[in-house]
Amino acid sequence: MLKWIVLALVLVPLVVLALAVRPVLARLPRLRRAAAKLQRRADEAASLGVAAETLQQHAEGLQSRLETTQQRLTLIRSRRGD
Image (cartoon, rainbow, N blue to C red):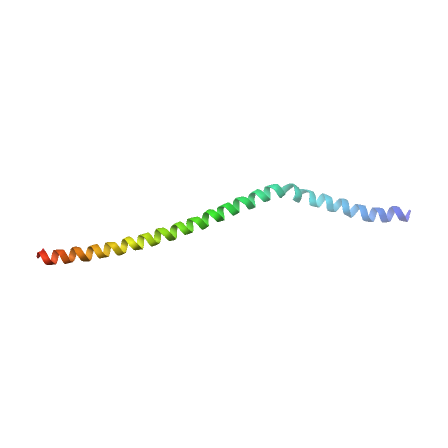
């Protein structure tokens, strides 16, 4: 009789644990896909950040060229007397 009580005290918690873990294990593939999707989005965000930085540098270069062109235009106009 004691053997059955000990066996029940060991098996019942194991069955309860298995029933509790089963839904989590069933969700693992979806969690992996979601993690992969998040990683792809993080990579895309990083590449967009690099692209934005490149565009910012290009815009700053264009701004500098525009200022130089305006200065030259002002100089040309002043020499012509306009």
